[in-house]
Amino acid sequence: MLFTPSSSAAIALIYTPPAPFDIRLSSTKFESLKKKIDSSSKPYPPESAPLLSIELLPLKTHNRDVSKLSVPSSVNPSGSSREEVDLASKLRSCFTEKDVRRLHTFVYKHPQNYLSTYVGNNLISSYARLGKLIEARKVFDEMSLKNVVSWTAILNAYLSFGLDIEALSVFRDFVASGIQPNCKTFVCAMNLCSSRLDYELGKQIHASIIKSKVNNLVVDSAIVYFYAQCCDLSSASCVFDRMPAYDVISWTTMITAYSQQGLGNKAFSVFTRMVSEGYVANEFTVCSVLNACGDEEAIGLGKQLHGAIVKKTVKNDVFIGTSLVDMYAKCGDIVNCRKVFDGMINRNTVTWTAIIAGYARNGYGEEAVNLFRIMRRRNLFVNNLTMVSILKACGSVRALMLGKEVHAQLLKKFGQFDIYIGSSLVWMYCKCDKSSIASNVLQQMPLKDVVSWTTMISGCCAHLGHESEALEFLKEMLGEGMEPNHFTYSSALKACARLENVEQGRLIHCSVKKTAAMSNVFVASALIFMYTKCGYVSDAVQVFDSMPERNLVAWKAMIVGYARNGLCQEALKLLYRMKEEGVKIDDCVHMEVLAACGNYYPMASRQVLDQDVNVP
Image (cartoon, rainbow, N blue to C red; front, side):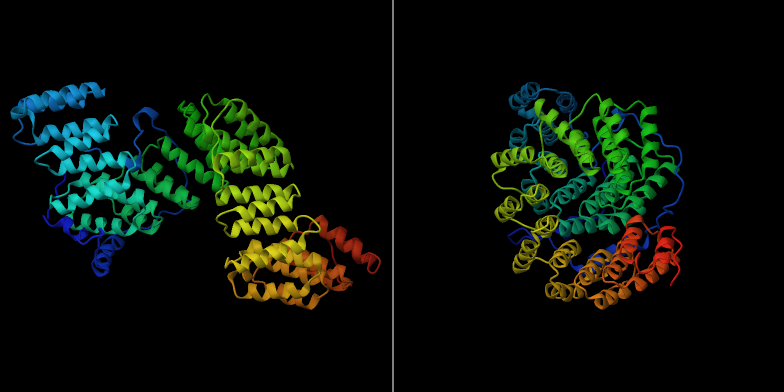
């Protein structure tokens, strides 16, 4: 069904003719329109709402991609002859390029009866549907009279081929033509902005849609998808909550947006609403919720979804199977992860990568390496994420030879590495105690980020004797204008502690005070460890007392610091305080205090072993 905007100047808001192409809307007008959305938004339901019974739609009935919601229509306009209608119907039923060309030739031979806008629109759609974009564009260019369907058909064709620049040019020409857009034109325009992540243009088009009073489920879903792709979840939520009606695709769009942005609890909340309102999940919904389950380690809901999948016998879907493998791997359930993997009839590269990454992440490097070797024997395609995962596995089991083989393959394939592969190579060589090779890889990387530098610094700190190199890398990182994060600071302070270089440690402490990293519990714990290792217990106490929150690492650092510096009474007092605040005392703390203080306070030390500390 087509919706015609009520205002003939509706699209004029988003076009100004000067070159280069520029689309503007005053911020005042847009803010007033945005307030209409905000004022009608509804609050989210409680995240703790109970899940109802989960149902799944059959796969064959729901395979629409949210990003491709628009398919140009060639509805018979008034005035078209019966012959044109019949010809258009035959074009829509063509399955081969040869059939379309035959009908196209027939049109050219009888231009007086068939060469019309309606037939031309159907020719454009038929060629585009069969992947013949050049032929579709030729038909479009040869049309003497174009309507909104003509423009929408060619715009959608370019979008379906991923030719965003060309699609933007077509959209500019369409706006210049002065033809009124319909709802499907708006959908194509929003999808163009989603693909290009063109936030400003998308906002202008959204404002024009509001002024045109287009109220359509497909258009609203495209707007939600646009804001979700641009990571503006607040606007996506506002549009979603004011929608008068929903379908499974609009629900899935919102769930996927939250899941991809790491907001798993929000995704669960929307999924709960969807199920409680009687909507039936499809395979895309399930994949998004499973991804959120993995990120939040919500294995209970993941298993419930797994049960629904088995019940509906859709276990042969490779995407759902891969999502299950990934979910179980992220939740640390390697047994069920492998069961799902072994039970899959079809697997793709992402499936193999998911289980290899799962094994590597959970400390099963040997199994990850074995699966990678099976992949190579079967000549399966390996993507960048597979390489990153196997490099992590090689580092965890010190499989230097395989790591070098992967490195050689990467050099042969790419020549230079992106940040993720480069950082993984640095980490692997550091774990294998090859800091010189790791340094060479780092220096050869065309682009470095804080993760790359931190990987090198922490890798040097992991092996005795390379602490000075770690501090040199920190200086080089700062010299390039890169801002350290809390992992960088923690690693650098660890190096200072091992070197007992309190002066360098103080300099780092001064730098940390100027950043948000000072409130990080691991940075504070590293400072305590550094000061106590260098014998500056009073400085460590100041850091400990100023911490807004403390974890076991901080308590342990301070207690062990007291004990190693001969301050056994203070160590035992702090141990007692730790117990009073409900922090569990582990065996490592027990043994450290017993070893350091057993000769001075034998009775108290024995009580430490029973977790019944008395202040002497």
